[in-house]
Length: 170
Image 1 (spheres, rainbow, N blue to C red):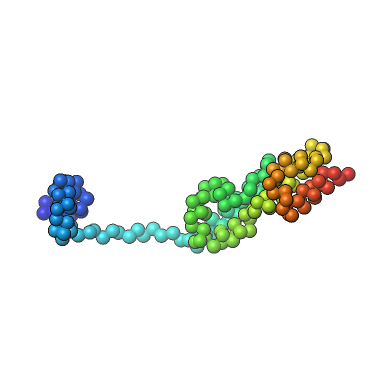
Image 2: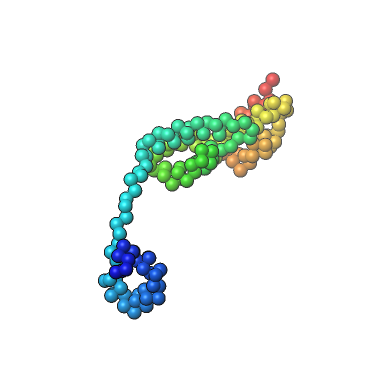
């Protein structure tokens, strides 16, 4: 410590590892008394402005949810993870949503339940059959929409009935 007064414990341990180990095992009390004082860590001046970040992320989340919901092809469920992947902020949304109240409100508005997503898939499947000019049987519509497990839910059952009527119109 006299040779290098500014050195911390880690540097001193590296210079004479055997001595430190011996003192630690045999006279820990003396070692603690004669250790160099801890250096004060400098606080980072970087702080997150959560209000500003929240307003920015809220707009991005809203446009992402709309983009996912209106994407061409087979529907994609609007979930927190899907939005996070789309905007490249999955960890932020999963770990710090409590600090982003505006974003949380937008998510509540746009996130889909399993039933809501099933209804959207049924509507998509019905449109596909309509474009093809075919009238599917109930089971064909259920299979294409991929809602077999949810077909007993009232909302989903009503959507299936409506889609069958839609494809049988003329």
